[in-house]
Amino acid sequence: MNALFELYPGLRQSLPYVALADLPTPIEPLARLGAAIGAPNLYVKRDDLSASLYGGNKVRKLEFLLGRALRDGRKCVMTFGAAGSNHALATALYARQAGLRSISMLVPQPNARSVGRNLLLSHAAEAELHHHGGMVQVVLPSVYHYLRHGLRDGVLPMIIPPGGTTPLGMAGFVAAAFELKRQVDAGAMPAPDRLYAASGTMGTVIGLLLGLVAAGLDTRVVAVRVTQPQFTSMRKARRFFAATNRLLHRADPSFPLLPFPEDRLEMRHEFYGEAYGQYTEAGMRAVRMARETEDLKLEGTYTGKTFAAILVDAAAGRLRDRTALFWNTYNSRDFSRDITHLDYHALPRSVHRYFEESVQPLDR
Image 1 (tube, rainbow, N blue to C red):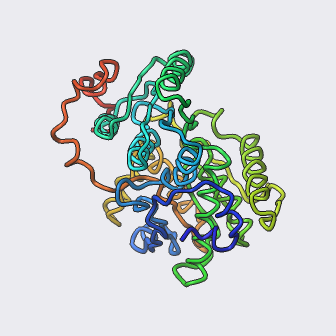
Image 2 (cartoon, one colour):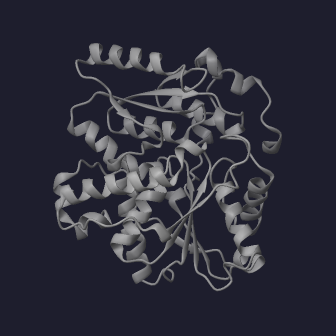
């Protein structure tokens, strides 16, 4: 059962929710890797195994967001992301499981093998895919398809922002922090001093931060920025923290209102690289090291850059006497058999480039 609901039953009664994830996700020591880099107390939270259909961090948010769509009688959801968006893919898969249609409004990104795979699986999940030249160019088509589906269905689609980052979506990671607290109390690991997670639209890191404070864990969240600066900032962190806190307090007044913990959030900007989705040498070195020492599957856009921060901090001696937890937000479920029979020509012509052009050099 969702750990948050057990402690605050009023939330279960008030918040929309549909169970999708296989929780709790395991915590595992990274003993070999930790010994090699000078971080002897290094662990991983295996959110890559968060569900059997498709893992990663998105499912925790979608339990609440799709719950709202179902409660409100929606027929369809519309979301946004880059061409290879894991969030858009997860939304398509779990919307179909919940009996909803999905629309993915996509914008370009640097090419990588994962982009084509995600597009094919989104097509297999019957997502309606639209790809436009950028965030400005996608606005009018989004309005058109939003109204078109509303007229057809008699009810407008539910809008899910990029990454599923809304106060309701972030409740999924508040719950994840309480899940972590329960695992710490059960002896799965010592209470972490530092928790490293990728920060795209900030939903994962801010939900965790609020949950950690509410659960009484004195953990510092290290948010490794992997998107453009406007998506990850202290200003947004404070706003998201307060909005999510207010939502939970309104839903169950026994959930406390908490001040923003200025000293508990560390934002790291130096691992982003040149662009969203552009792999870096440091990130891919981290990907290789994790795979070779622990058979841990990471990728170059989010988790590789996050793990690169761990390697740098370990090399600087910051983790020698600290317990560190890496929150693996990437899906590790193998869906290759689901797409081997698919022909990319069945996809919109605007995304054919991801199958016909070379991938970026670091992904070869």
